[in-house]
Length: 85
Image 1 (cartoon, rainbow, N blue to C red):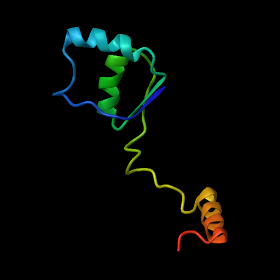
Image 2: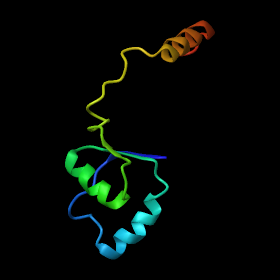
Image 3: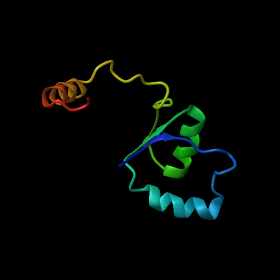
């Protein structure tokens, strides 16, 4: 299991009692991909492990491929069936 685009603000960072509870829940997460080094620092404290990496904001920093083969296959199949008109 992975947490992607992981961010945590100072305002939402749990207090000590909540940290202990949250740490138990987060034990089951294999990987945290944090948006920034600051987020990595906070998630590392909560996750209590080496499972946190900085990936940036995957929504805005990573561009999707120009054309996916599956999209072209679907367009072709829809065109052959006469659909989409």
